Image 1 (cartoon, rainbow, N blue to C red):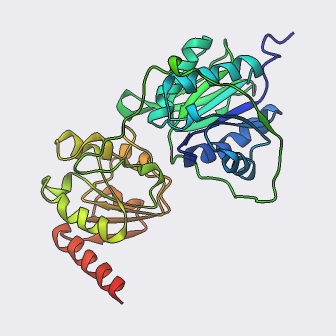
Image 2: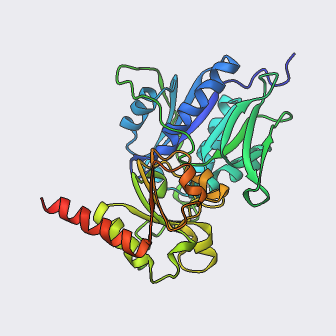
Length: 336
């Protein structure tokens, strides 16, 4: 008898906060569909949160075969204690074959806690998913050695197989409003005394809870910006467009911006509709972080910059002249 015969189905956690779902959960439903089909099992969305009725329906419309829902006021905001205890109980009861979680700040906290408790492996920060040759194990692909190599990892000796996957690597599937499926509601409540931490949100002077993973427009600067002060012109362009500000690793290493803003293999993976790459040469580690962008607009004074090989629109010129000109042009368009 197969030692893992009792473990069935591929689970995707739909991350929630304040009754809202993070996009990464719906992205992962699309990514996990081929895994479930390849293994001949169901794709199950797991939703833990407060006021999650619409999120459960959305999960079905984005491709889940069924939903397991845990709802309560203690899940209004994320806490390690409440969410890990709830997810552990679900896993021990239903025994999924695989559990996929978004590699957000919360997901990176939750995944290892749960994996350690149930004594299974976890592959963190993945950028690719597949099945190994026999179709039994998920092949988790993630960057290693500072992003210079890609490693593919399997977990053949324990279940469930677990991994966290970066937001923005995969696109959401088509939303089918006619899709339906069962929603299993599990009553799991965590006593207040068992929740030992609370989240306090504090905005810094430069950023209000940046969430680059969900941004539709991003204006990013690289080493070519020349100085921290020059990011002022990027901020003006971003404000005009209603965009998010971001940067390459070289900018973080220079101390010009915080790691919160970093895009790339060692930063955030993004998939905006428009990505402005300003003064960014186009190192392979950075390109891996923007592979999901629909349109890339590159501005660089070096006509041989690698970023131009993948950009949809290429502007060769001095960014100190081009960026303010773009800002003025967009401002003028809005006035009319």
